[in-house]
Image (cartoon, rainbow, N blue to C red; front, side, top):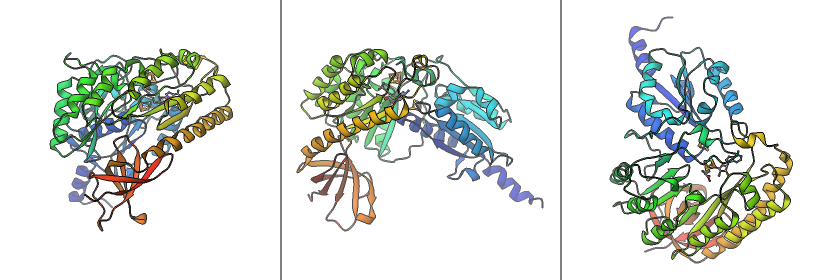
Length: 452
Ligand code: SAH
Ligand code: SF4
Ligand code: F3S
């Protein structure tokens, strides 16, 4: 039966709906916030169920584990939704990596765009609405521009991201990012600071500065170094916490530590991925630093006036990694005393130099090595988290565990703190409270709010 004219018109209006799914790092999560803001500005309405959406966007990650195969598998599932006039878009790192091949394998996809082309999204949406079916935004390390938009739809009203540098020029042997995210390019410090001020005016109290290598930041206006920008963001009225991630050891300068010492709002935490504790493996990975060179940066951080928490990423099973290389990584974990380490099994990735090296270490052996490191690291954390027993620390409320009548929060050092309070009503999200630590675990702290 034909729908009455009135409801058909209504359907036309609500077909400008979209559903978005996001994978990958914080930069991808923040890109999605900007894509959502852009779509909403173009008159689209976000829906939580893909069945209700006219446009389905899939923001992909390609860092490890046959990511492209997973995307094609997911697209196949989407295919089942076809026939209802739905349009599909593939965004992010797999989009940039696979490019037009996506149209060949999934002809129902109408738009394929890497992150370096998102600034052209409004124009691509117009073409999509006009019925074009093979729209591409594939920059392939061409652009010098960043994706700045005032239409960012941030998911959390208290803490939000600002991307200050996009892309990567480092070309580590194993990594897809330089191929998927384009050339390294930074956003002008004025623009970063005015976004920070707008966020503070809107009630945000925590800002997290983002970049694949956040400390490789180079102000295009030449006004500020990374450390100066960090300090300036920390001095914005109303901002209580500033985080920054990920720092690359090559570009880690002493003035970053000095800035943390000087500006109390800068969080006492540095994520400084080492990848391996073996100089030979670091060389094979093209990381362009040695174990000792890395440890010198760690010594600067340990020399700070405030105790700064350190975390890292590790890859195990890189081609040629020996038992001794693994042991070098384990001893490095112990020497540094990280508060958290993200360990990954090496995964060969398309286009990267390491793809030509034999992936000689079997998966079970990689899994064993991962376990060895995780166990050694757990012991490091069991001891190091114990140092917080009895301390009072400021905790930002991030959630509630009603079943246990507990509040879940985060310390300036980025540690999870589960705590109770004497008040009958649990404190609201985004509040800051002093908490005394009464119990410690290798991955979290437990405490009670201090009544002031
Ligand atoms: N720019 C950051 C890291 C970004 S990628 C840096 O250089 O430190 C995030 C993490 O993914 C990396 O630190 C690395 O540990 C991991 N990673 C990247 N490529 C990988 C691969 N091919 N296999 C396994 N892990 C990988
Ligand atoms: Fe990848 Fe290396 Fe760039 Fe980090 S610095 S994003 S690991 S190429
Ligand atoms: Fe993944 Fe791309 Fe981020 S590969 S980790 S989404 S930069």
